[in-house]
Image 1 (spheres, helix red, strand yellow):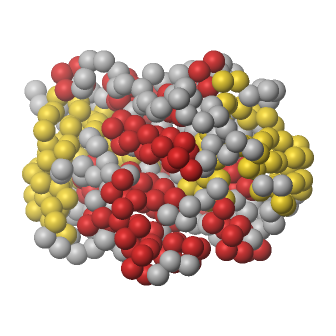
Image 2: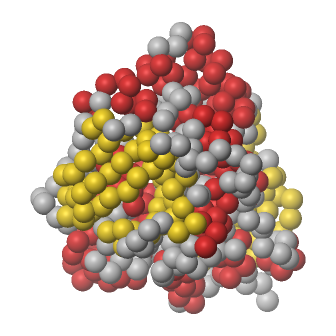
Image 3: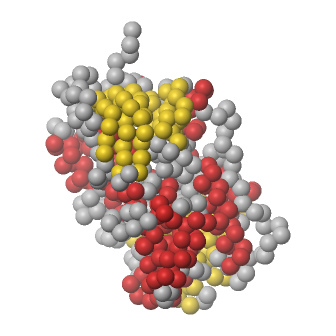
Length: 493
């Protein structure tokens, strides 16, 4: 007997401007089952998944059929009379959270539409592993960590009563313990009859959850079947970067932080008396649970969170708290690469132009010089400059992450704050980016603050590791990265 289907995709094709994004992909989402889409960045996973919601790129030519429930009309994106509700947890959660409204207002309005009340909101947040319910409800999305934003969006999907959930990199940007709990949460939802379409580079989670795996490359299906049949037997190799041996020791103190205490609007403290130093040519990794204050610290250093006391000094000189007061030199000296790269690019301008514009604005380069430097740097990071000539919607999340890194490096910073820049990347791309950062650090003396839950990447790149918990640095003197035992975290090897 054939298993029932909630959503059926048959030979889906999506092309934009003569470029084929998806070519003949088929899959099924069944109640109480998990279908996983895997493949390198840019392989067509997100485009395929969004077809379940009837969402396609502007100007797309769509072929094949997407049937939402049985029976359906068979027309791509058009639900038939038996259509089921599909919830979506995107890779970049900030893009679906209204920045001008507090989380509590967003969720209560959504609950009201779907016949729920305040208790339904609290229950959804707890089911999404957000324990500080009142604190989350009172904040705006930008006051949450990336992991917290992602779980708020999951709570939104739960509030709608969706029978199918599309989860795009749901463990991205979370510490391993939280990622394991989120995977367990999805497992419980599936056990209650929810169908799950999982997009992930996290092969451990795919092996744990998936019943069927569809492997994509360049928009085409290359393998399909149970995880044991289509995924590599061994775990993906840990990324590598050059060791300290044979390269210069860290130089003088480049960035120093003393007595840093940061607050949210309204006065709630986020960071408490934080102090650290970062030397030229050094990579300091900052680890800790989602919501512990890592991103807030990075934003303070970059002038993006001016509500703080204490001192931040660059080469011994105090840095203004706000990015608006730093001037060209201060702006170029401390660069920040966000976890959510997509939200940092303007929608309708080519990505290449936006990378080059940074060199024009902050280094005084001519337009032609800046464009040449941008192309060279993008290529070195594994992103074809021709592809970067498209608007952001034409690039995958991983490709935009590389472009965001290029935009920061093209201004030749003294300090680079990297906030979860390897999350959501395939293994080869991650290794290439880490190697490029190591080369830049060793060649130019670039100082790196590497915020990450990816302990394999931390071990490959970092010279020292500090841990943050509840807004405080808790580990005392930094340990060598290879010796770090981080409380509450386990290696994702």
